[in-house]
Image (cartoon, rainbow, N blue to C red; front, side, top):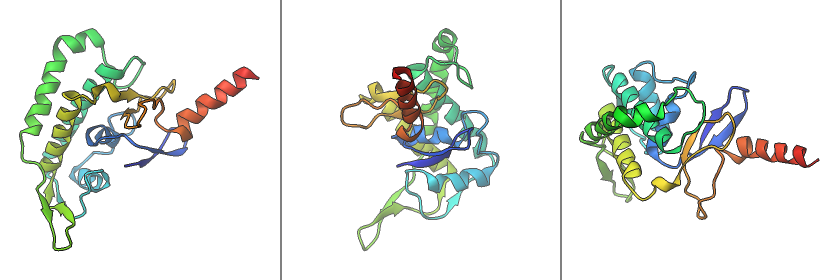
Length: 200
């Protein structure tokens, strides 16, 4: 599922994170793009996600801190696998591997242990989620997706965009596994332009 993002230069482009937990990073883990300031922000963000929530959403103010804690844990784990750039928030490799990694894995486990959204089906054989979907249920779905990603055989497909100043992280779901860019319309096109200028 693609989301439309806007870069610092004002350019809009389509980006597919490839999986729910990495998509959740788009809610603001990269400075200065924080979108989760209060419960209403998370309630508004959930229906935008690939989870496909169409009914009512209930989020308590106490769930915002948890959402940011889970998001940060996913970010650090993903950067620990993919990152080698100067990025914000920064990750210190050795210090992270020594202690914070286990804490982040425990964060995933804690959120994943909560009940996820409940699937239901109607008379037209259309699947949806039992209403209301709560913030806690959504975060459980995100954490369970992260457990599947970091503990599964798709981890080798985890990528950080190859653009010089781009830290977007995605799961490469392409058949050949050769995706390098957050978007061909953005970083991929910039690389083509630089290559063309170098050749000429």
